[in-house]
Image (tube, helix red, strand yellow):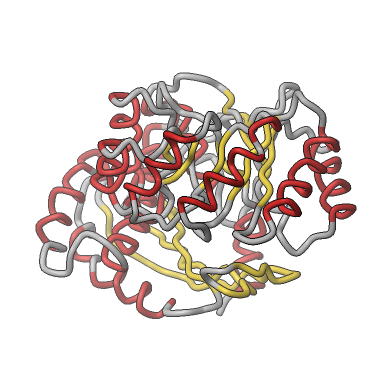
Length: 362
């Protein structure tokens, strides 16, 4: 089998109502580059990377297209050759930013293709450690919601079967922020895992203060309280709190995760499949986490991250962010314990819906 063509499609998925964030401002859309690897035997591998608010999406498309010569003609069974070639090819541009995002799209599609060729889900192709993965609801409980709305939404997640969820806090008015988190805890009870995300908005001093104020709420983790590149500050916060600190979603490749682990900057690492540069690097990051006795969670891309986490001994929580759901035929299913079920379907087990592509095409 040989890869004969790389094809891309752009789709624009609305986020309504828009989300207000400090770093990115208002998020109104997730704008995706769907990447297809076609073969001479009719199998097609699928991958997806994205930007927000259609910003610099064309640059991502061009980067993916510029890497086509690295993969066309490749036997999918020798997919490891892609990364070996790519690291040499990308050396001049560097191993962060758009070059790595372009590689991620192709590597995602290549792993999907390899699984389909073998007739196995990627988790089973790798040798799965479990058939279902702990998962948390991440598509809600935002800062703009009232306490009443937070409690109703949290109860709704529980009613849908989730046994874990994440809410957000800001850097000011710590008493009010803690009251909001406490309201969510009261709504879901003590047996539901609760995470809190500060989206890199705080100083270390602010993070330690609010972190200590939340410690009686039995949080599963406190996520990215300080700016992602300041590992010294992250380590200081982690050392000061009993609540585990989670970070890593904005780091690039397994080397970024290695630096985080070496600095003692997180109790939970959460690599992002896009910023890792695809599944090959995500798995390297996961194995580094195992070496450092650190749980490995995921950031976004639940339809693909599910298989990867299930194949990692230290695979932790899957982030269920529904931004990309509209483009897929299938949905992630929860079992009776509230865990995400690894599908038996080959490849990622989730496939793009041609009708949805036509509807959202840019």
